[in-house]
Amino acid sequence: MDNRPQWGTRAGFILAAVGSAVGLGNIWRFPAVAYENGGGAFFLPYLFALLTAGIPLLVLEFTLGHKYRGSAPLTYAKLNKRFEWLGWWQVAISFIISTYYAVIIAWAMSFAGFSFSLKWGDDPGSFLFGDYLKLAETPGDVGGIVPGVFLPLIIVWVITLGVLFKGVKKGIEVANKIFIPALVILFLVIVVRALTLDGAAQGLEAFFKPDWSKIADGKVWVAAYGQIFFSLSIAFAIMITYSSYLPKKTDITNNAFITGFANSGFELLAGIGVFAALGFMASQAGVPVNEVVKAGVGLAFVVFPQIINEFPALNGMFGSLFFICLVLAGLSSLISIVETFVAGVQDKFKVSRTKAVLYGGGLSALISILFATKGGLYFLDAADYFINQFGVALAGLVEVVVVVWVLKELKNLQSHANSMSDIMLGAWFKICLGVVTPLVLGYMMVQNIITNIKDNY
Ligand code: PHE
Ligand code: NA
Image (cartoon, rainbow, N blue to C red; front, side, top):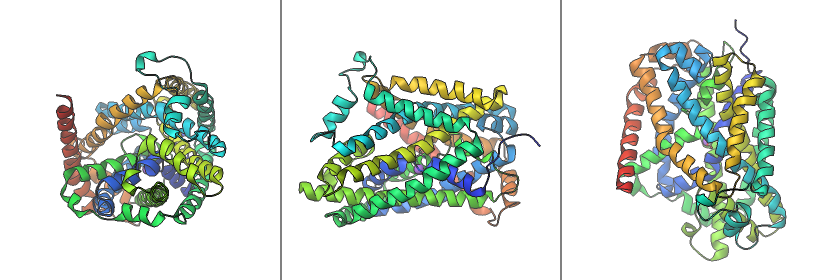
C-alpha cells in the first residue's frame, strides 16, 4: 500500500469532479454555443456527444487514474514507459490555462464588488477595456501592473494555493463541499429571479427554438463535441489525477455518469438563466433577443453589467450574486487544473506537496501577473486561441488512439471498471471509444486545419 492521499467520501470525489467540470464554460460558453448552433435542435448533437464521447471518456480517464493510481504523467508511464509525454502534454495544457483562468476569476471578483455601486456606469464596454483593464492600443504598449486586477488576482491565488497546501481531503474536498452547494443555491436564486423578469419568455423562446436545418451542418457537430470536451475537463489530465485519489473499491462507471449528467444539468440551468436575462435586456432595449446575445468576456463583463443597470430593484445584490457564482465556479475549476501539475511534479520528483504547490502553483501565479498588466488581454486571447485550436481536441484524439489502438488497453480497463460497478460496460463503450470518438475527433482536427489555412492564406 502506498501513501497516496485519498478522498474522504464518495460524495467528496464526485463534488470535486463536478467542481472541475462546472466552470466558466457552463455559464458563459454553453448558452451562446447552443443558441448559435441551432437552439433547441443543438440538444440532439449535444446529447449524442455526451453519450458517445463525454461519458465514455470520463469512464476511461476515471479508470486509468483509479487503476494506475498516478497523476497523468505517472499513469501513462505505468501504462507504457514510452507514453509518459502524453501526460506531460496534458499537464502543460492545464498549466497554460491556469495562468489566464485565474485572471478571469479575478475580474469576476472585482465585478462582484463593482455591482453595488454600478461602477461601470452607462457604458460597461469602455469601462471594462478602458478604465478597468487599461487595455493598451497595441501589445507593444504593455507595461505596468493594473492595480484593479492585481489585488483580486493575489486573493485568487492565495485561496487556490491555500486549498492545495491542505491536500486532497482537507483542502480540495472541503473546498468543493462548500463551493459547489453554494454555487448551486446562489445560481438557482438568479435563475428564478431572471425567470420572473419582463421579456424572460421571449429569451427562452429564442434559446429553445429549434433550427433543424443546422443538424446537417458538420460545424454544429464539431461545436457539440468541442463543448462537451471543454466542459467535462476531458484530456486536461484533471480527471485522471482526481480519480487517482479514489479508494480501492468504488463504482467508477456510476461516478462518471453522475459527473457527466450533473455538468450538463448545470449547463442547461445556465442557458435558461442567461437567456431569461437576455430576454429581459432585449425587451428593455426594444430590440430582438439575437441582438444582445454574446459569449465569453463580452457576455459576463459587458452584457451582464448592462442587465444589472436595468434591473428593477436590488440590482447590486443580483449583480454581485452573478459574479460570485462565476468566482465559485471558476475557483473549483482552477483548483483542479493546478492540482494536475502539483501531482505531476510530486510523482515525478518525489517532493512534498508543499514544495510542489509552491513551485508549480507559484510559477503559474507569477506568469498570470503578466495578464494583469496593461494590454494583458492580448496575451490572454492568444493563449486561449492557441489552446482551443491545437490543444484540447488533439490531446483527446491522441489519448484515445494511444490507449485503445496502440496499447490495446480498452479490454483491461473495461474489466477493471466492470469488476466494481452496477453498470456493465459492453458494446456501447467499445464502439464509442474504439470507432466513433476517434473518427469524430479526427474529422474535427482536419476541419480545424482547413479553416486555419483558409483564414490565413
Ligand atoms: N470544465 C471547465 C468549464 O466548463 C473548464 C475547464 C477546462 C476547467 C479545463 C479546468 C480545466 O468551464
Ligand atoms: Na463544464
